[in-house]
Amino acid sequence: RRSLCARRSLCALTVCMAQDAAATKLQALHRGNSSRRLQEDNQEAGSALEAMLARVDSSAADATPRAEADAAARVQALHRGNSARRLQAEEHAAAAVVLEAGATRAAERKSENERRSSDAAASAAAAEMLRAAGTGAAEATGSSDWCRALAFGSSS
Image (cartoon, rainbow, N blue to C red; front, side, top):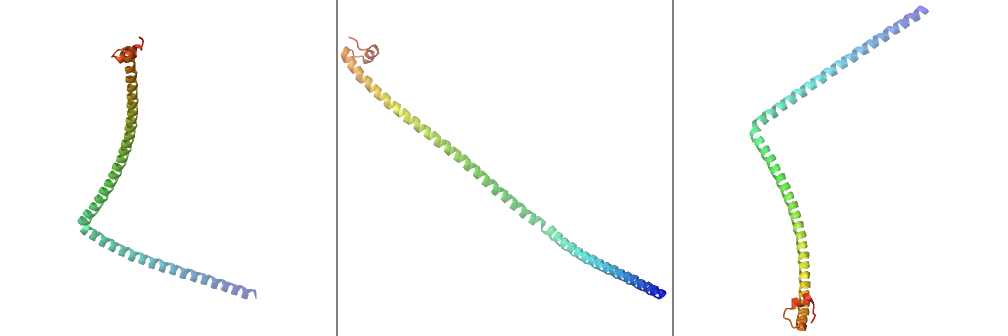
C-alpha cells in the first residue's frame, strides 16, 4: 500500500511539475509574442513619425524664406506697437506732471497777484491817508512840502 501511495504521490508530483513547466512555457511564449508585437507597433509608429517629420522638414525647408520673412515682420510689428504704446504712456505721464506743475504755478501766481493786489490797495490807502495827513499838516504849517511836515511833525 505504501508503495502504491508513494507511486501515486510521485506521479502526482510529476504531473504537477509538468503542468507548472507547461504553464511557465506558455507564459514565456505569451510574453515573447506580446513584446514582439509591441516592438513592431513601436517600429511602425516610429517610422510613421519619422515620415511625418521628414514631410514637415521638407515643407519647412521649401517655405522657410517666405515664412521666416512673415514671422520676422510680425515680430517687428508687435515690437513697434508695444514700443509706441509704452512711449505714449510715458508722454501721457509726463504731460500730467507738466499740467500739475503748471496748475501749481498758476495757483502760486494767482496768490502772488492777490497778495500784490492787496498790497497795492493797502499802499494806495496809506498813500491816500498820507496825502490827507500831509495836506492837513501843510495847511497847518503853511508849508507846501507835506512830506517834510510829516517827517518832522507838525509843530508851529
